[in-house]
Length: 210
Ligand SMILES: Cc1cc2nc3c(=O)[nH]c(=O)nc-3n(C[C@H](O)[C@H](O)[C@H](O)COP(=O)(O)O)c2cc1C
Image 1 (cartoon, helix red, strand yellow):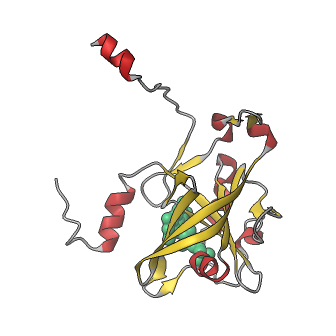
Image 2 (spheres, protein in one colour):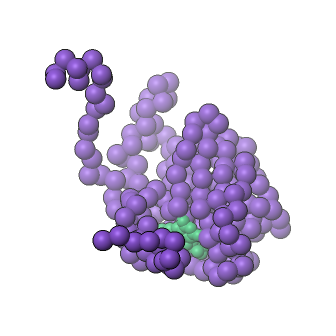
């Protein structure tokens, strides 16, 4: 079956895209408005795209056309945010921070989360998350009146000590992080513990074999 995206309604495109492009990592974004009110929300239109400069991108939609989400508004205003990764143990709290609270509500407090001051930005990180990236806004790419891509530059990264196998060689105990991925449907998630190891093939080895 084929689907013509030029004639499909946006919510139908969303359904098809999010039920086939997966699992998606989840950026649990902490931001702050100009008055200092903290905000947290998860975004799975997210990934890292480069290491030089170290770039990550988050796709932020609107609640309704013209009604931007608080995360996007805060990043526009202050230019700073922290992306926290979501572990299995963070799942319930992450889901609470996705509730459509009004801007004056601090989702971190609602979810019973604690914050730790950041090194390079005013926005704190989530203490309970095993990995966090302190970011500054590089640019915002406007896709529509209520939809934008936030391009962030990573200024600093935190990893809980228990997950760092070798600080000199920068080895992280990735399986131990037990990060969650976003799957399809309203509430679908996946664990990252079902691993397959497949080393890259060198061209010389391939040619010798054939
Ligand atoms: C796992 C998960 C992933 C989400 N991904 C996105 C996303 O990529 N883009 C988006 O606009 N909203 C996404 N949402 C919805 C936002 O988290 C939700 O609208 C939130 O209330 C926005 O909060 P804010 O207005 O405080 O920024 C996601 C929700 C969940 C639970």
